[in-house]
Image (tube, rainbow, N blue to C red):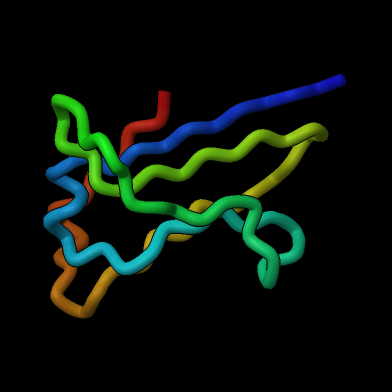
Length: 81
């Protein structure tokens, strides 16, 4: 059985960009695979939002990060490891 886990944390730098929502959308975009939630313990990097998902089959998905109108895209950097 294939099992993949994805964990994403948006740290303090990302939080300052007027984040509204973060979602992982699969084939049926009306039912997100995962939705970001506030972080109870921000840790040393000051995380503010977490998104965790585990999939059982190969999945193609879109990571959607929604921000307010005051967001400046030139200040955003996403690293995936």
